[in-house]
Image 1 (cartoon, rainbow, N blue to C red):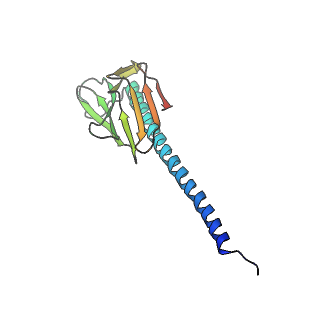
Image 2: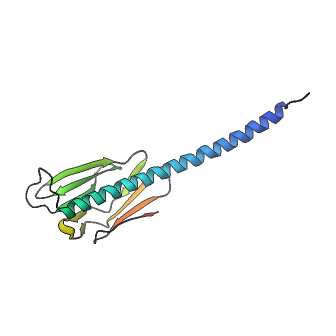
Image 3: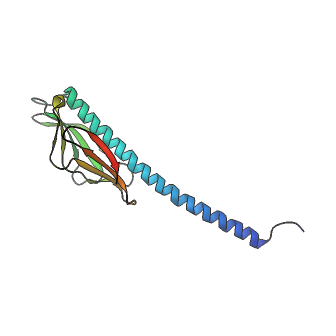
Length: 155
């Protein structure tokens, strides 16, 4: 008789299950890293939006008085939310966003104000933003310098 024994089939199924389990775990880690990197790209994009609108002197409707710049600020009490405001005598919300999934802002280093007409940046803290995942030990750090340079690095 030709064919496979029950034990041979069980061994093959066991090996396939092990490979599948390793693949699923690896994919979940990759997916979490991609969420963190997408969150970092989103924040960098919105920091550049604030920087460009401040440099161009974009003054949205509702902004009273002279435009001082555009400010990036984490939302107090929200681990994943942040806002971009135009700062005049009052502050006008330009954009509000929340990071997706299990991604959060773990340290924001204070407000970041991009001054008008490329006059640099006012920092109320370190100018460092850390983006992490609740299930990963690594993340992305974004730094804004007083000269307005925006850079990111893995942590």
